[in-house]
Image 1: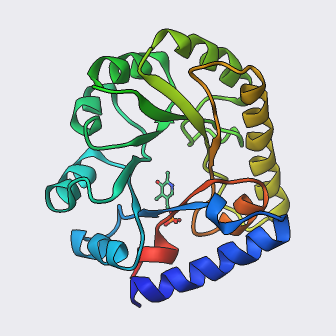
Image 2 (image 1 turned 180 degrees about the vertical axis):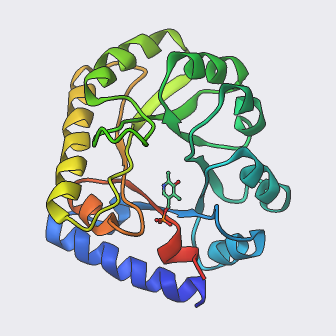
Image 3 (image 1 turned 60 degrees about the vertical axis):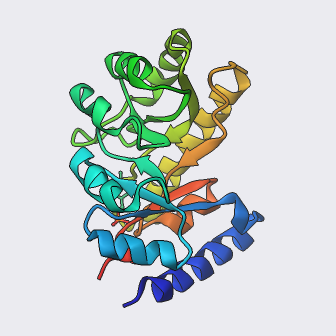
Length: 223
Ligand SMILES: *Cc1c(COP(=O)(O)O)cnc(C)c1O
């Protein structure tokens, strides 16, 4: 199916979720996750009106960057090895996976300008998942003050792979609650206005619970 048709469906669902939650669709940015698909398919997404693309590996980002350059706004959404920072730092406008000080230090050293970073939180506590535990988030945000180029634009999580609405909602609610806690500290380096949560399987619920950036692969660019 064409990306344009899939996008139409996604937009209808976003509108429905926003209506349910009393929000405006323009509060929600769609990131098309292109990690499974070709550069041509990513190009098709741009032609359909998508402006934000997400990749989870430095090779994937570099390959698509060669053709698309800075035309889309790039999001790096995968776990990031410190030694790979240099490969993505001039391409990505957002990094969704900041989860340790050593990574913050390297990002801070390599970037030429302030860069928006999401702190990845492992809300559900699954061992297979990356990210800080919820208790670690506030102390970590405070420690990031020393890295003058890092802007904590928001928090990111991946919900457990389940259809259980209760489990998903509780995960999203916890991230929202943490966001409010960070915002209340009013730290200049941590405005924390964004919530990166919601994937193909659960983005409507994520929007109802306050997502401002949703990361959609399969449902948007999958073939
Ligand atoms: C792959 C991926 C997505 C998109 O997953 P879909 O289920 O295909 O929508 C979103 N976020 C992250 C971090 C991913 O790795």
